Length: 193
Picture 1 (cartoon, helix red, strand yellow):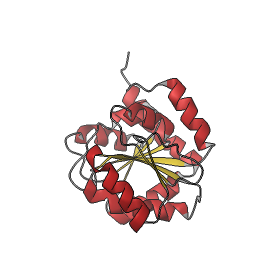
Picture 2 (cartoon, rainbow, N blue to C red):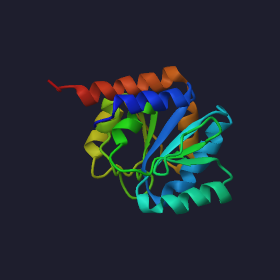
Picture 3 (cartoon, rainbow, N blue to C red):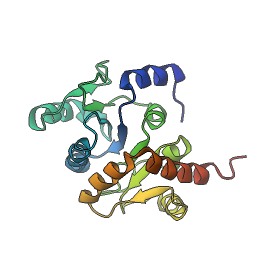
Picture 4 (cartoon, rainbow, N blue to C red):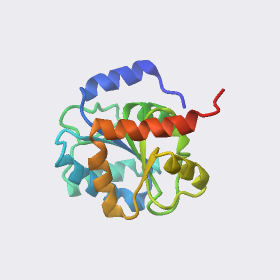
């Protein structure tokens, strides 16, 4: 997937070596699970930033209000051209066509929908761009890809919502995320020639 290098560099500079993880194409029914996992992981890394890409960009305004009012989290919205400053805890990436950018910036990616209704994105997208994958059991329609990644040690499967927090916390260790991302990259790029 494309990802403008100048934009990636600018955002990476803003992140200032903060730990970052991504919730890709997150459906509404998984929002509470991901926010609970983020809160739990923030206890291990207080500067942790979640890049949240909603499955339905039309929900972005309501989602931002819920995150700020009910969850007491600092939020910045991409569509409003707000920057993910140091105090921002959730960066709402509510614009279309930028998944390549987010995969390049986040060393950890949770594949939205895999704990509920099914995967919304192909797992080789983040795998080919160096992001470690976390997913649930609902991998259709990309079950074969997830299976290949799992067999090669390139993805971490969580069985229930509570396991997501543990997986994110564990992968905050750069060596663990790198090992998973390397396994995923090897699978996603094999046969590329």
